[in-house]
Each structure stands twice: as structure tokens, then as C-alpha cells.
Amino acid sequence: MHSWIEDDAEVSAFLRSLDATSFDDRILVADARRVAIVERSALAAALPARRAAFAAAGAAAPRLTHAAALPLDEHHVLVTATWKAGQFDLASTYLLRRTADGLRAIAYVNHRDLKSARAADT
Image 1 (cartoon, rainbow, N blue to C red):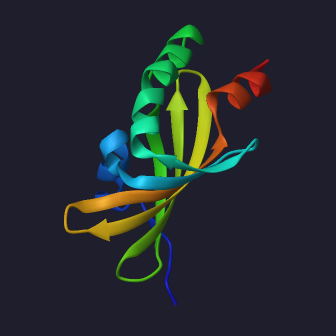
Image 2: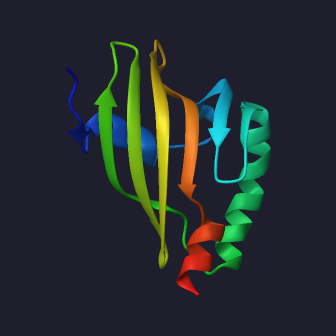
Image 3: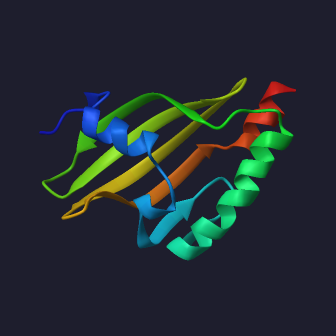
């Protein structure tokens, strides 16, 4: 039986350096509105708009506040993460795969994005 690991150093480092290159070539992405397989190039193309949305909301770039990892087997780790972006609290879950190049996100669930956090804050 596997157990959750709070603030695993490798996982926390991965999350703190998260960018488009952290994702597999194609990734499962889900939020309250949709589920889709997304190309890494599409994720990279969306990042400037995401940064602009945070800036428009007066929020700083998201900062990792907590992470917990559940090793599923020698290749896969389920990770829950909470983030703080200014006054907004965000939450996400990742399925990570260990590769020769390190951890790679293969699935991403956005539980509480900036839009829903802003709505809850008003």
C-alpha cells in the first residue's frame, strides 16, 4: 500500500519550476468546463494569456504553498498542489511520469482556477 508524502522535495522542485517543457508531448487536461487532450505546443501558446489574466486580476504569479505526492508505482506519481496568486487560492492535481529526463506531467486537473477563485472572492 502506498502512502501520501507531504512536501516531497523532488515533486515540490518540479512544481516550482513548472513550465511548458514540464509536460509530456500530449497531456490530459481537465477543469470544471471540459476535458481534452492538449498538445504541449498549445499549452505553451496559452501561457502569455494566462500571465496576462493574472496581471489583470492584480495577482502575482502563482506560488506553490503545499504539495502531496502519492507514488502509484515506480513510474507514476499522483500529486495534489495548492497555490497562492496574490489573494487567490488555487488548487490542482497532476499525474506525473518518471522519465530519463526527470518528472513529466501527463495529466492535469485544474480544480480552482483564477476565474473561479475571483468569483468566490467577490
